[in-house]
Image: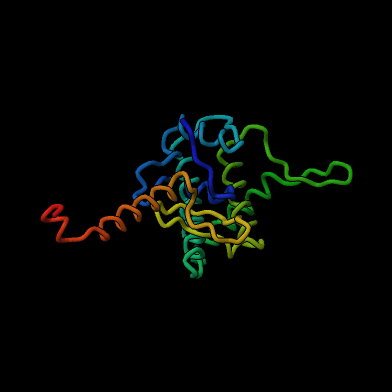
Length: 192
């Protein structure tokens, strides 16, 4: 199974693990698909995600979605959702602190990821985006509803990806432009 990773942010990849506006497919709901999805992000699982783990990730995903969808719409994120993210981040700092190696300091992330570590890593990414300089570039794709950080040079990216939604949207608009450009009389009566 192939997964599209277009968000330019690990936290927003979690948001996009529910596909489309209608939320038909939840890549975390099926343990095998969740493992493949996590692996595609470079976060190989130590064990399958059980129902309780899915609920924990889904709760964090909902909070991140509420906050960043509001930001993409030019609104303020829900303070309760921000608290969910902050709490997950704080627990992650406690469980997966820092490693000092000579002159460098880095996070103590596992080689294989359990649910607790995944929640911590996604929460850390969300906090990094909330406190970083890319927050104003968070956007929502008008076609599918996925969230992404616009890293284009002129900050004019419109869709999650040109391949997924941009081409479809352009084809749709082209079709409707051509349909409205046809002479209505000729269209009904046929050519003269």
